[in-house]
Amino acid sequence: MKSQSYLQKIHRFESGSSDDAGILYVVTRPEDIPNAIASGAAFVFYNDVSKAESPAGTYLEGVKYVLEGEGEFDPDEFEEDFFENVYRRLKKIPLDILETERCFLRETCVSDLDSFYEIYSDSTVTKYMENLFDRTEEEKYTENYRDLIYEIYGHGIWTVWLKETGEIIGRAGLDERAGYDKPELGFLIGPGWQRMGLAEEVCKGILRWASENEIGAIMSITDPGNIPSVNLLKKLGFTKSGSFDETRDIWIRE
Image (cartoon, rainbow, N blue to C red; front, side, top):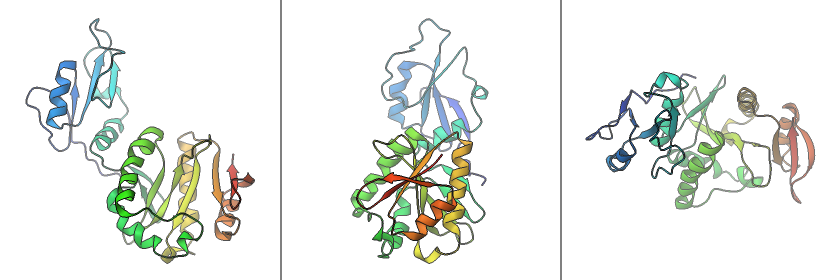
């Protein structure tokens, strides 16, 4: 999948700089941070560690990303996609994650919720999983999920798009569950797109992505009565490892 590029330029922040679309600003002087914040600019702070007056180790209020290097800032010292991702994070633009033969996966955003509510309106969907919150709470949950899961862990449950039609057809990804040290594979393909092999295709893509990103063992939790999910987990190489609660089992893929 060729991701759309949102970042057009990287500029050093100067007095009078504004929140221009497509520009990521680099602040090099701590005293300029308040102005950058006031302008609404998407910015990072670059700390020249070779200077004695460098504020290394100090608290930089309002700064989300701090870069360190010696000498003048050089964007070529950082990975190619780094600044694109930083810009999208600061502008709350969801990141593209992976592509399979028939689907795209990207981070979830509030605009996806209409499609999710339609999918979840089918009672078969909520037979084995919790329903969505009411709209206001679900929007807040989605925003918090971006800040507390995507940004911290680099993965989470993502939105699944069908390439052929551009429809949102479900959700899948690697979630984080409190009290467990393995990411949890979760997947849902809406009833209208089931029995087409899409869940297997998407989950295989996620497992490949996990391997490429050096994620080891993965868990999944499912109700033993959910036969399609149980069969898919077996096909994906998961084995039952124990009980999660009175109604669900834990499956592990090493």
